[in-house]
Length: 262
Image 1: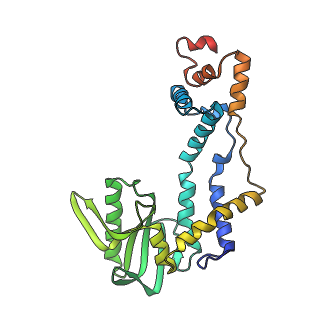
Image 2: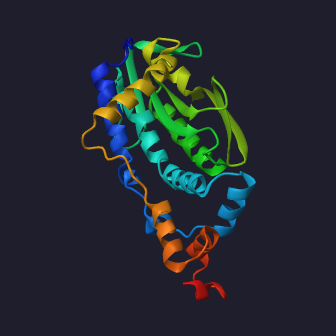
């Protein structure tokens, strides 16, 4: 049963559909050419297959998943950010800030009440180096100077722990912090926006079935049927070579000795 009060079932379904569309080319099937586009390391595949005691099919499927996964972060970032466009009081600007949350009744932040929260959002807690962290902090300081009725949050989808803490960082080799510039995990931000302590948990509990339903009902969504193993098998038969040699030829076609097998 759908029991989220902060986003309608219709809106969440629409957002899940839009997120899946963000996968775009990543849903296209892999053939051998696409699989080896950035040159596979055959030695690594040989080691992995034997050390993990798996099949060639398993190793190839894992490598395809890894390649797809490297480019999927943008789609998941889209999900985390743009879902707030359906939340009361929130906007998702095209530039400037990732999310802006406003409440004329006031928002409680560390003993202070503000009317606006400006958000920078990160997928993971370790994706920001010191240079980008300093730049983001200066941006937030500037916002506080221009608007004395606001707070600025660095919201992390995958934080090291659940938290809503004062963000301390280093700018121009000096440690800086401000009670209205904060580092907040996603669950705590959902709590701030919705007023429900377990809002993010409730969303997570509904999400798997929602995604499954959308995928099953999407007529325009093509589930990829990868052809890499099939094409490697054809190469083995055509050249009368082993799977190991076929794997080596993905990266070493022009190397001394290997060219005789082409």
